[in-house]
Structure formats: C-alpha cells, structure tokens
Image 1 (tube, one colour):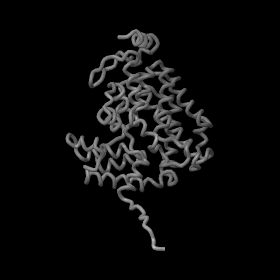
Image 2: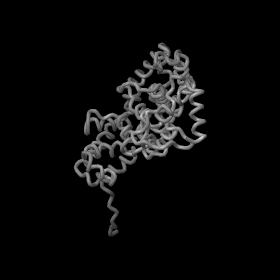
Image 3: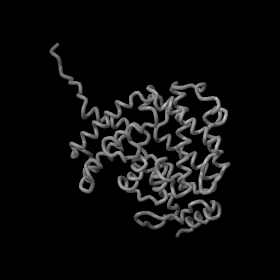
Image 4: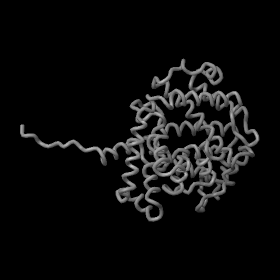
Length: 335
C-alpha cells in the first residue's frame, strides 16, 4: 500500500464517526482488484461513475418536464448533482464517509430511461412488471458498463428507492433521503418557473415550517437531519419537518405531477417508446451490435429493455422519426 493511500485511510480512521463505513472495511468487488496508489475504493467508484456513458446520458433525460426549451429546468443530470451536494453536506456534518455517499448519489439514477418515470412505466408494461429504475441502475453498473463497483455502492444504488429495503450503510440511507429532499424542492422550483403553480398556491402552514424560499426549504430539511443526528441507526428528519416535507410531496402530486402542462405530452412519449420496444423485439438484429451480442446469453426482451432504458429523450425521438416518420421527398418539379 502506498504512503498516500495509507495516509487517506488513517485520516478516515481519525476523523470519521464510528458509525461511518470506512473504505478499508468495504466488502469489496465482485472481481478483486489491487489497491490504487492514491484513491480509496469508494473514490475509484465515484470516478468510474463520472466517466461512464450512462452518467453523460443523464443530461438529456427528463426529470419532470419533457424536453423543456428553457435551459434552467432540471434534467436527470442536474437532479443527480443536487442529490450529491445535499448528501455530501449531510454526510460531512454527521462524520460519515463522504466519498461513499458521493459515489452512491452520482450513480443512483443511471438506469432511468427516456422521459423519466413515463419510460419506466412503459418497460413495466411491455417488458416486466418488476422493472424498476433503481435495479436497472445496478444492472448498468454491473453488466452493461462493467464498472465492478464495491458492494456498498451497489447496495446504496439499489436501496435509494422507497420500495426497497434500506441500504446497509448510513451513507446509503443519507442518499435515499437526499434524493427526496432534492426532488421535492427542485420540482417545486421548476413548477413555479413554469407557472404551473405560484408561491401563493403553496399552503401557508408548510411555508411557515419549511421556509419561504427554495434555499430555506432545503436548509430546513438538511439542518433537521443534522440536528437529529443518527438515531438508533437511522438518518431522518425531525418529526415536524418530516411531516411537512411529506405534505409538500402530496401537494406536488396533486398540483404538479398530474398537471396537463407538465405531463400533457407523456402519453405521446409512452406510445413512442412502446412502438420502439415492439419494433426491436420483432427485429433484434437491428439493435446496436453491443446489444445483439448479448442476445446469445440473455433474452431478446431483456436486451431490448436495456436499449430502451439507455435512450435519452432526444435519441428516442430521433430514432422514432428515422424508423416511422417518412422523409419529405425533395424531387424536382417541371415548373
């Protein structure tokens, strides 16, 4: 082990909480690797995630608003960055492993498909009712891009969704909660920008508890977690903040997530993805070569589901146009 790496590990032993997951205590990778000279296992995971193709594709995947023209609406990538920032702040304050937290946060949505949850619903109907973006994110890391991430990072990615059991590390639990803090607040901010709702529509009692501005509301939730600390192995908000955050989430569901302004085009997007899925299941040899090669070991449906899940919004639309929309014929007239 190099002196640099040993110094980093010693720093973790000295500074981090006894409840933190030390890098040297990782359960390791599916395929063993020699130590890096200057990075811990979790730092290497973070770097692999940032340099992956799946991470770059997040910039063109929907968060809430489909293909917005305004540059300031969140995408799946900016959501991911905001989750990472919130999670790192909490982990640092609680003495947890910031590198592990960051790796989980940056990878938690790698498996989200085109058009956000609309794409997820399509694959649940067409491929499998058990399809879920968090498990697809693990599949991207393990199989599709072969990142060979540590057990703790994969566990945190899988466990960030509310339908899954809690992650085995407190760092993973921080990301699970930070994901909710991020989307509640930035979806509210984007909805106000889009004029779907106004500040005056938000229940006054929630504003009085959480704050009158975007930054104050995030601060209230984050500071509440830090103030409460780790309680019986749980990372959570104070009860009154938790209740207000849950009520804000319900407000968004009733007024934004079902709004025809935000979601009016989702039906078209779903029908487009369904048609693409059906087309490639019927014509698997037209898949890109990397997906065709895997048909030898996996079903056609599984490979097509991976392909559709990998698509960005604009890639799906362009591909649909190429396959199903006739080009204008530009012949010469005799005029």
